[in-house]
Length: 125
Image (cartoon, helix red, strand yellow):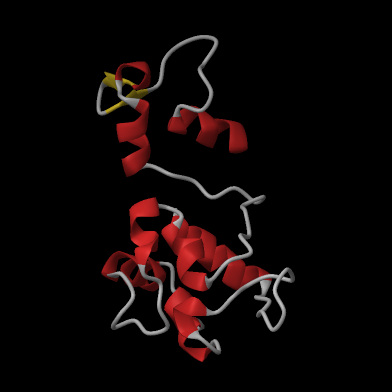
């Protein structure tokens, strides 16, 4: 399964044959543009030791300017990504919302369950 996904994302090139998207050979598509429309979350996704909002915002560095505690003041695209990944089911319950520090590297940081980390990775995708 992983090999198929990597082929579809253009991370691997087929030895034989070709992969087409709507009749267009994947090799003819701009890789950066294609990855804006297709992504995957592998089992070994990264758990960044930063805030919840930053974990989501790493998908687009331009979003990292002002990560705050409430959905009303955090960048709307971060909130949208959290909503689409259902991470909003647990973010409001965290001590500092989107500004809650995650990981063992910080004193008084919050450690998420595996499922919650997966939702953040999905939001980042």
